[in-house]
Image (cartoon, rainbow, N blue to C red):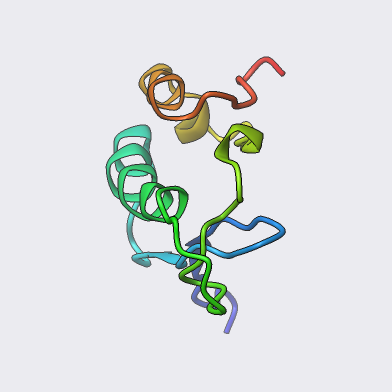
Amino acid sequence: MKFPTKIQVWGMMSHRALSELHIIPPEQTINGAHYRDNILAKTCSDATNRTANTDSILERSMLGDMSDFLFMQDGAPPHTANFTQRWYVEHFPRFWRKVE
């Protein structure tokens, strides 16, 4: 095929655990609102709020101490949108702002 189907996924990882993968529908445009409401508020929040210390890499806490958590993203427009940046401030004590 000249233009094969592409699959976009979003996920988080730490030295202790992985998040579930968020699979983006093939025709979905990822804007700031979709990123914040469907990825950050659901998949990301679920992963960062875990407290278990199980053997399952998909169930255990991402970090032993969330004060060590540093959230980074690239410069994609949904990541750098003003309301996305405000969401980060409200939910993560530390993250790399778009200027860093």
